[in-house]
Image (cartoon, rainbow, N blue to C red; front, side):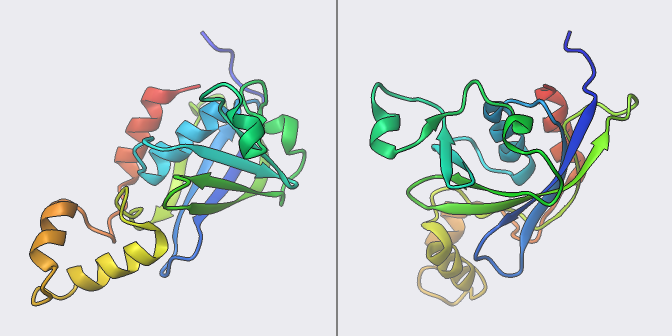
Amino acid sequence: MRPQCQRVYQLKIVLQDIRPQIWRRVQVPADIRLGRLHLVFQFALGWTNSHLHSFAFDGVQYTMPYEEGALEELQMEDERNLSLEDLVKAAKTRFGYDYDFGDSWHHEVMVEKVLSADPAIRYPICLAGTRACPPEDCGGVGGYAELQKVLKNPKHPEYPDMKLWVGRRYDPEAFDLERINKALNRLRV
């Protein structure tokens, strides 16, 4: 069993170029590995972990190696042996998180606080947020804007197809803190 962490980073993750904003506030162990942090972001934001990702710290990008030589081609570094505290030393530090290199979902992450861990809390945990992330593979910011426009107009010629594609359960305003924390509970690092 993993020993209780000593320090916790409180992070605010904001999906860029979407209005109104989609964001999450999470607390994670300072020593969390980047690969696990990626999974925290996936669960907290509601993505499905179906695409590649990268982190950007001070102009250097990190990702998981997925085929021989690919990191050199992408000009990225291997994330596997790095923890968040290796790259972030203080509150107010900002870094980037990109998900789905095709749709190009850019997130800005700010370390809001560095805290002492509360022994009564199991980390990671989501504290707050707003709105649902766009559906996977909707075409990035532009595709999402078009999807929203179509879904707001049942008379639009593409409405039946888009409604079928996105499914009845998709609600762009939905945010379910309890569901997110249940998912994070299964992930415990």
